Image (cartoon, rainbow, N blue to C red; front, side, top):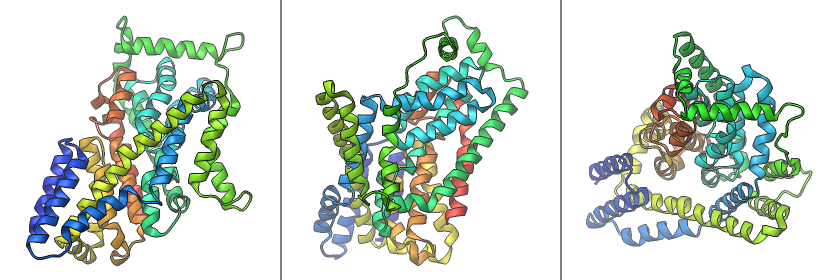
Length: 442
């Protein structure tokens, strides 16, 4: 049974790499392993697989938190609160040329904590930052890479689906999970900023003038973006008509996390992150009372999308995990990892990273790992929250090293370059980041 299960798992990840529907693949693979176990005489396989699926769909600790967070994110985008925050953070960069590359990465990373969709964050930040960077003479591929590298910041949100999942496994809150790797995340971010800056300087010194060539072409995407960047700089000068920032709107996206931290410190009532997300969603909706009905629709669109895209994926992964347990594959893998903790570290880090880099999404791999192997982390000599966090963060970082990821394509299109040109600049910073997480957390 174990070897049959191993073959099915290999086929499963091959299918995911081919970008087949991940939920379908996980459910079919889990059902196939459960069927093999049932034929071999293991009782309760069919009922167990069904119950595993249903229990995730109605999980009272995961579903409300994840849906509330994504609903809040949708409200922030609809009310332009996130856009005001972007304008507020990016305005100083227009006056400090040497800080543009590190500043763009940092701003994208911070915005992604609130706008948790990587593609949505890239679109929100990139429409302002990319033209500005090109107008300041930054290479187009570097400008796109700055946005792409910053799109793993959502791992810092306590309400992010993976943090909630890891917290449930480790009997911790999402805030406690994030706190456990915050310092490592800052180090990994700093390393990626330094590496991208060094790569950009090296390419420029080698005479790579691709950006200038693009800009010289009349009507090119880069020329248009650079013109927008020049306009953006002009808008920041005295006497011009700058974008008027609503400072109250700019503050709203950060309020749930601020309130959560204050509650944890005893300054405010120590409510769950779900309560703060819902409360701040209402606050955001009240900023535009005339369109509150449309705002409510956007909130529930966010809730529905999160259930469709995230909760159902977790439910499908639970069937896959049940099948692995039923055929004895999980136990066999844990036994192998007990003999070599290096295998566990490599599996948690490079497994989701490689799958994400090749397929554009490592979510399915991270969820499968965290539901099958991470619960046994203590047996392998690791903390549950450490192993689970490495797996989910590696998947997010790997996406920023993938030429086929939707967010990479968006970033490349905004800068007028190919996705591969962008990834040539992001791959080393992302590889360094995942190695830092692997060896500092585990």
